[in-house]
Length: 101
Image (cartoon, rainbow, N blue to C red; front, side, top):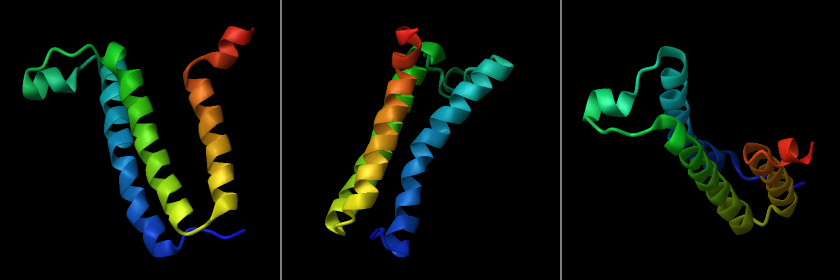
């Protein structure tokens, strides 16, 4: 199966930065009850209300970047595997499997 070249893949790893920031924001709030946006910027933002949509948007940024790179380099097998993983992850994040029970 053809893969995305290493140079492009290294550049695409920067797309994980927004997801990491949202993850840190949510974990700090859940573990230490500190809202970083309110403390640093004076923004009164409900972390639990905005956390999940922010995480979904961050995942969408990553998927879009890797998808475009896979299409440009004609890595169809890698694109299909990535799409299956992303669909499963999004269904899991939306509690689809929990609602089936």
